[in-house]
Amino acid sequence: MAPDVFAPAKINLFLHVGAPGADGYHPLCSLMTFADIGDRVGVRAADALSLRVGGPFAAALQGAEADNLVMRAVRALMARTRGPQPPVAFTLDKRLPVAAGLGGGSSDAGAALRLAREILGASLSDTELEAIAAELGADGAACLWGRPVLAQGRGERLSPAPGLPVLDAVLVNPGVSVSTPEVYRALDARGVFGDIAPPTMPDAFESVEELSGWLRTTANDLQAPAMALAPAIGDVLETLADEPETLLARMSGSGATCFALCGSDIEAETLAERLEAMRPNWWVERCRLGGPWDGAI
Image (cartoon, rainbow, N blue to C red; front, side, top):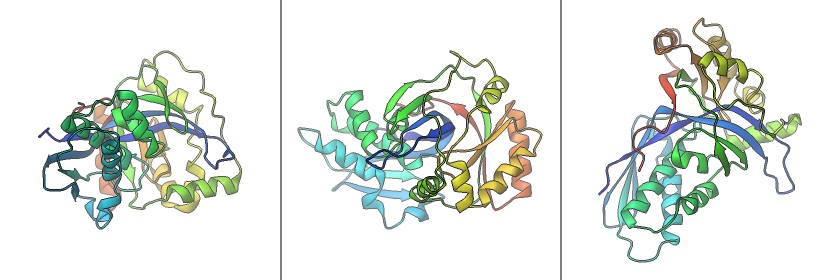
């Protein structure tokens, strides 16, 4: 059996969301990058296809293993695969908060797809694998490979990101889950939508300071409606913005996790330690953003 693989947290450096189309879906434009922290997905021989979830955030997924994105992804791949399909059991070490704007489920599904293709010897191209991932959600295609990308459409249209420096960052979740559909309903109620044309970007950003300055010309259009539903997000953002190490503070995805970009790993470590002391009930993780990280197949 293949070794377990890394499923990194996804961060939306910016997320612009347009008005819904006739089909009800919102087009988007987002610059995504990935953290060196995340979940791990493994596989072993078994009597039947199954999923076992462990880790610090396993409780949030208990009782719903059969409908987990890992299982949905593997079943979709098997439906497209000819030949023998030996039964396998997947394991998920859930280290990321659930429903947190980090693309954890999509990243887990991407890791499972890569593993399943290898284990089953499926003759599916990368493009075919991306199509399966995209069917699972807006983050699916990007999270399959875990490398920085510009995502458009429903998230399935990917193009290379500009060159990014490795970014030292701190992730913070106040311990609340936010429903993505509810955030989008709140966005629609506000009636304020973003420009989904890709903003003008240089070929590469030379420093985190340059990138942070440029990101201030962008936004996360889901941040305001998410804050209305979960005021704790605003508390996190205000706290981060007041700290001297923070170059930019923003929410990722539909929340509730926020991130602070810092000028160095020492500054990120200092900020993380201070936040842990100030708010012991918050989930705080120092990380680096970039990718792809270890575990790629």
